[in-house]
Image (cartoon, rainbow, N blue to C red; front, side):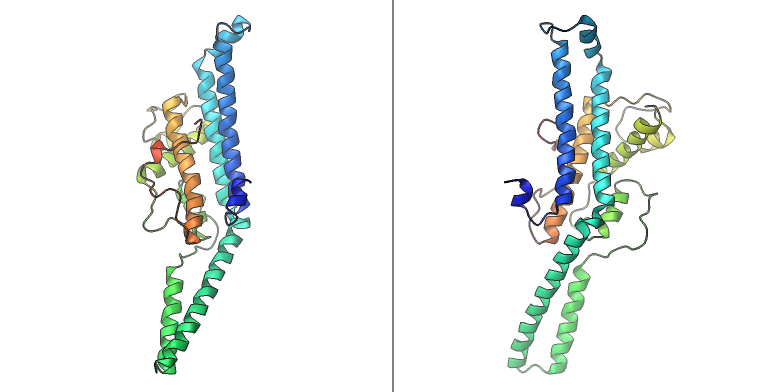
Amino acid sequence: MTEQDENPDVPGSFFDMRQQILSAINSRIVLLVGLATLKDPSSNVPERHRTAAENPEHIASLNAATVVQIFGHIEGFVEGAGTRLGPAIVAARAQQKEEFRKITKQANIEARARGVSEEGIKLLSNIGMKAFEALRPGTPRGRLDLTLDRPERWEDALRRIWLGAPPDRPLPKDLSQTLNELAQVRNVLLHRMVRIDRAGLAAVIEGPWTQEDELVHIDGEIYNRYIAALWTYAEEIQDRFLIVLNSPPRNPSLEDWRSRKPAGG
């Protein structure tokens, strides 16, 4: 039985994203093992291959490729969520509304039995329905604002299908800043020949880069922070869906996000 079979209420598109994230992580692990094998003096490989494997830039390139790929999977899921995830959320909301109507109908019957007037029953029903609607998050309309920083751009998309951050569960500031930093670093890696630009420097909060045109190497420390931020955000999407369905989230808090990483990193 797959994880999706065990959690039928979570749409398949989330598990598609999760599977792609795990695939990227596992591919990195396999390649790291391969590099370690090449560096082993007892391995039967040409010396030039062993020398090349000892170059730290290879691991930095693996790290960069992994976080860029995972970032893309999350962005693709979030910005296309309305096609598969949205209808599931809407259906869940409709079901909750119908259940509320049934509860209200039974309450009205009991109110009449207690001698409450029809005008009073109507007033109470209207108040109850307005309270129900007020509890449903607002849904922004119009086109996505592509000028927003991440993750606010993702949050804008998620709010449209009632998966915005709950009031008592905001994203930690440093998590948001790390995802925004990674968004700019990703652009540098893909479009700037690995040399950081002004926009990238403006977004850096903990990275080592201080001057324009510095080479961007994703070492182990930077990778660990980026992968923890990406993994936490992906899991948070699932937790929000569970919250909408009145189920407890898997992760009670986001404050420890830096310690979260998938198995194998």
